[in-house]
Image 1 (spheres, helix red, strand yellow):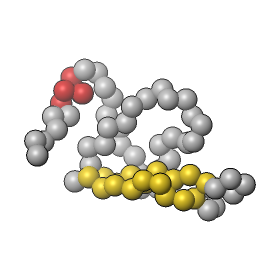
Image 2: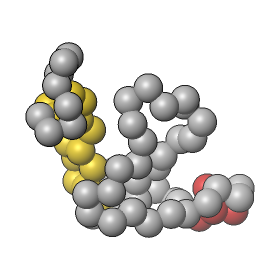
Image 3: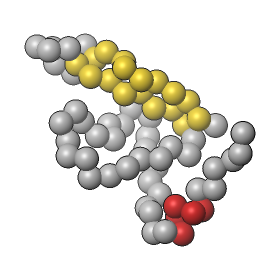
Image 4: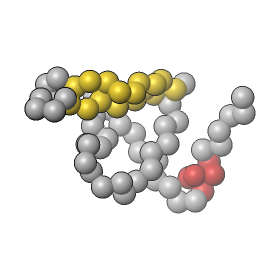
Length: 66
């Protein structure tokens, strides 16, 4: 497996941002204005069931990167 060269994205002017554990990156229904590439860390994508608040999310995707 070839390592990804994230310098290519940085050289193209793509901003690099850090997020803290538990921080929301985007919400369901937000306009698709950005593309996120994860260099390292963990991400969980969740959504709430119909009629349920954020208190009962269901994980639909979870992954961890080095």
